[in-house]
Image 1: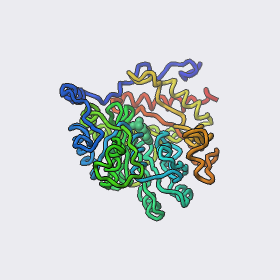
Image 2: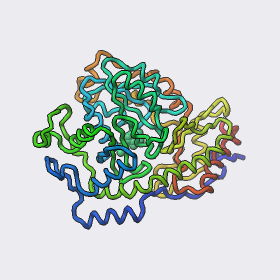
Image 3: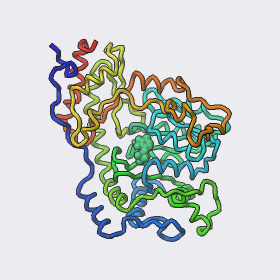
Image 4: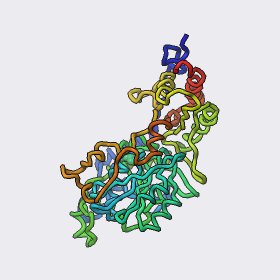
Length: 431
Ligand SMILES: *Cc1c(COP(=O)(O)O)cnc(C)c1O
């Protein structure tokens, strides 16, 4: 008789996992206070004091900069917007090349396109899934202007080697830290290694305000350029007496006072939320690592991983079962998370297909029908096989889950482990 739930046996878990909800009465009170003030955003798109936004926005920026020990924090309405500001502020131009990761949320690769620059994909590290410095160096040409590194799944990139390469070739570094707030490397916060670092306050991230983002930098000029791009630069530069007009077409990327007030409360909770994630992962990893074919994520030396997701490496030679089948069987043993039932059981075979395989790159159509901006460079490669390590990880090796979020009890984590264990022990049923 079948034991595995996927074959009609009993599930390990029959009740929903506890809700993952980091929003509490502090956020509620902060939002209500803003609503009662009647001023839900105080930004003005011209050169006056309110060009920099209202009291909540400014307080958030000050507190964020203090927390991450960096000179400037610029709030915007998403990390995607923060990436646009960063690319624009660095003066990246049409036809420039920017080296990006294929294994990330799409915006960290598409941001250069907004300024007519070309994303050039480098491969990732086998163990850590961040940009591989060797591959980055191989992709540098005379047109390369910047590297966008990503601290993927909560793990800091190899900041020392990337900085070395950037300095050697005169490149700027944008650090996409959307998935790693609070991670550290050599005693310094992830997000503060690049010329500009970017954080997300989107609902899926460690802390959130619904939609929001923050760009950080120690360079006052870059910070000011990002504030201009955030808020109608073209209407402000003349009165402000600002005379570097490159990329000074502005957007409206402003954060509201409500989001800023909520984010200030969220920042206070970050440390505790990160600690819980690490504790839960350590508890789970210790047990999962005893299963044949499953190896929990390695953490870079001198770094902390803050586990936006918990990556596992799957080895089919130890199980004989395809990764897809294995994951389906684990999912069948478990239940979704309360209030996020529509997401299903969050255990996945792989992350995202390597981004260069998206139609955007395959068809090289971004703006208009003539291939702009891809047509600005003599040749550009997006074919399958471009980043073999990334493709192998995505097609064969990676399992991702987030059933270690704050709110999960030891008993809940035991159920997650038991699902993996049960599938390993009954793998013959899957053959
Ligand atoms: C979520 C995410 C983003 C985009 O964040 P938004 O705030 O939703 O725009 C960018 N990069 C990475 C790596 C992300 O995970």
